[in-house]
Length: 200
Image 1 (cartoon, rainbow, N blue to C red):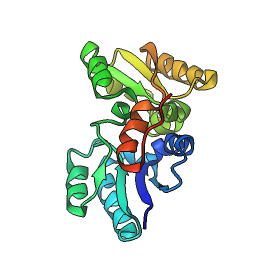
Image 2: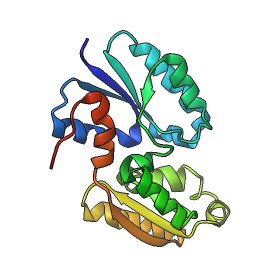
Image 3: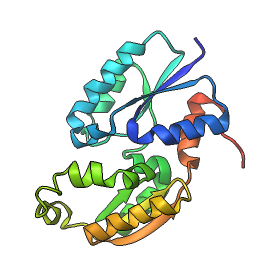
């Protein structure tokens, strides 16, 4: 029972697999819950609890690849009750930008909407359709009236994803900023439980 299980948000699936493969963490296994749960965050804690209980006793450790994700602290309650740990950070954006980097971004402009590679790729499905903006376009003004900037935290150097992020900023009428974060902070957080981080 040497394997470590990471129960994660589907939005992190590709990033987790990439970091696992780069580090050759063969003892790391990944199970993901649907990213759409972010549109109903009240369902996240019990969905995570169920997944933990399905896997208890099968792994050396279970690590939760979620941030608070809008659960108002309820996810941390479940994690404490179930005796597991989660990756650090109040938002998944901190997993990519680091806590200091994210704090600086937030302080410089609180009215910032953030995208990761996953959210940029699936902006239409998760944001436009997920929030009903395709059916009720007037809601865009309601939801985003206090936003001024869109920051794309890029894990990959991919022109196609960058273009999608720019289109998202244009759709929301927000100033666009791209920051190349890579996976180093996510990798560092994982390495505490999974193994030793690579040295580039």
